[in-house]
Image (cartoon, rainbow, N blue to C red):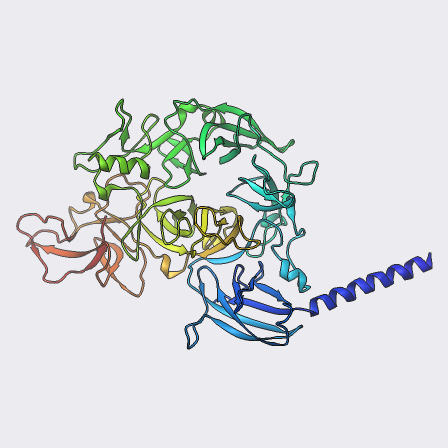
Length: 601
């Protein structure tokens, strides 16, 4: 027995020694954010002869390339949304003396507003950190046997956070799970990892050790999941519903329905199929909102323009789903457009009218039923150009006291690689001005999903992730390891670049006894068109304006979608502030200079 322990001890010592020696073979290259000094994942270092090396989720590379040790090596440095300074010849990179056991740190300037944190899914998230013998936050190197995962859905039940994805791939064969893999993790407040650091996923596994199919509905093609809906009714256990779709090539959805998650069996069970004639179909990540009609689940795949009463009974009733739309269903090939007395688009909730999508709006513009300026979408605060939104999510943010949208763009700088921030006082809008927070160079990053359960500091810092892939980008060079996986970002909502214009409404009921107009700045419920947009807090390029007891900030300079704001006066009458293009009452005289500039409605 003594001999056994001696041999075992020698083996363990030898293994430990070999591990240390193994780590000492490498040069450690750290790449950090110069602002936060945190390691940056997904940074590409390329040698002059085009050897490529990618930082892992802790921002490190274990370098031990034969023929390049103990000499100076130049590395071109590139990362989406980050920038390394140029040298005298215009190269963004650095020459490094590469020596085993050595360490060098490179600092990048972040262009993105959002900060990249780590890769959530797939194999080798901390590959180089393991080779270097560094501490890593997660348990497995190949969780669930999954190499890549598409489009995440999340919801909490009790102390557990449930995760579901679209299609996956695996090590054994290019085709993986096409019927919804799933996993669990602990909430940060219940023993889970800090979302700044990592997510430790516990997958639902089949008999072969691979992520099991949790939602295999009958019929040809994959099953995709959408719209996770948690229902908590008095005296009953929480229930989790979702919408499934069956898909045939090429991306044709031929069936939709509702499923419910069986927590004990870890599978989704069929509950309802939408009829083929269904006019209002939910899409996207739901959030709860109570208005004068009651409590609803609003669905935000893009703009939150569909909803259903927040009960299990209503979820299972196709007739209870509503669309917020200006369209009226017609027997003609195109729907009719509803307008108010001012000829403006008139939106209301209905169970029969279709949503005003970008595709449908383009057809209505061609038919002369919509004006080009009425195309739905967000406006780039920097350029004033229309943003064709793709998919994203919306949640109420306690810090901003507004609904916050994180959404991807279609046909931007890259096909599906740009992500934007916008906000609104109400779920139904107005959603108007947006700021780009992530950019990609010829790569896709689609279906960004916020995780409100991770919010910290009262919502000042939020977290979201999305799918990083060459799909739809035209790029023939997938990033090793990161391709077709989820990457986590965080966004600090105190960043001055996120100070966006909010709607300003004229309030005639409070103007009678006042020396000037009275305005309401972004009220919680409003249906009429705002007069203009202004900032709710100061920045370097703004000036404060007080009108009728309300303070807001307007721009000092002109720019895209900015209009002069003029003061109009008349003896014994209240003074008026009107944006250019507005008609003042007879007898009023305009000031010689504008008070400043406001954003157009």
